[in-house]
Image (cartoon, rainbow, N blue to C red):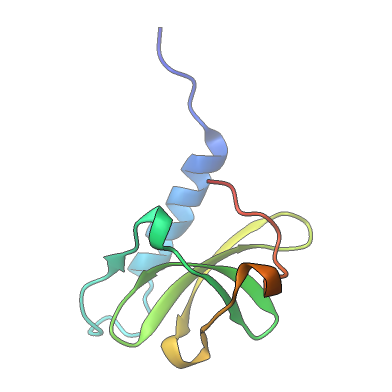
Length: 95
């Protein structure tokens, strides 16, 4: 019997893969992945999410919007601010 596939996890992985392929500055160095325990809670403007990957000058942030849709996008590192758990205002991110 084949194990049941998690379609949400697969969709998230595909969005992350697509984001990696569409880095806004392809010559910005190797894309480094943060271990799940080391992924900081962050804020970029009005977006509250979690930093999951980075290059020299960009960070890849994942977040859930008010409709609980998953998003992932590259932001310039200078726009990404770490946020303490008690100040974080985002929707819970699935592990």
